[in-house]
Length: 327
Image 1 (cartoon, rainbow, N blue to C red):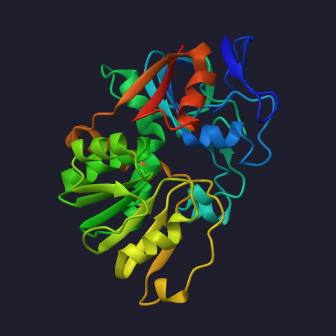
Image 2 (cartoon, one colour):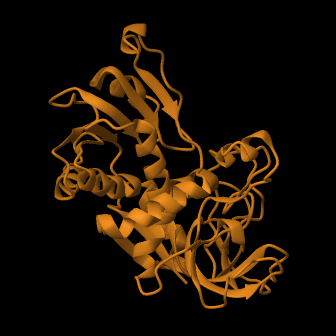
């Protein structure tokens, strides 16, 4: 198999040939059709997330075909298309797992972080965290749904049922969840880097009722705000934009430090919450509505060997939508 491998954080990935891995009990081997590039991959490669398993194959928005089966994988069949997300394994016995909060498992494994991921021609996946996908859809279009879509969905659920939703940081997750909000009859107010007219136009093209810089206030009070940009300074700005009783959801796995802010921004029962990982039910719920919404992902394709270029384009803010590697 071919793989782009990280040996040391803050260095480039290296293309390597490796023996084809064999699945153990409860695992499947997947031939990768496409793997989207997520900001979390940047956090792993750039050393923002501690203690990755090195050497490591990054990537956790994987679409592929089942190629080989370990024992105990139920009715999975070779050739079936599956998606493999960030949360790659849970213990099943800790208090979080047994109470339906497996996203907070005490002994998790994360695809492309603590187990090898999808910047490769093949990947081993826990069958419990490999989700059935449409057989005939474009795998490149499907790939961003496996993290940008899933974390965006969990963030939107955490935001509550409000009509006026602010979205800070208009990248891959935002461009998917804006489409969901519009389908649900909500109104999206998009906030981008100040002066990023292209991103603001992109947000409006997907149904946002307004789009401006993150340093601006919305034209009306928000019921909730979701922060996808990994910028702690946005938290007090979002708090100042939501109504009394409003909620600010931090949707990333990593964020710069949140600066101190006056208590009056939090008062009147405003809330700041975070989301972590996903549950299998999140994936089932979200993937079920994708065809109903008619989600269209905007993607830029890169060959597998151009993974470093894709990461750099994401790091530098040169992308609209999602970068996707195609082995």
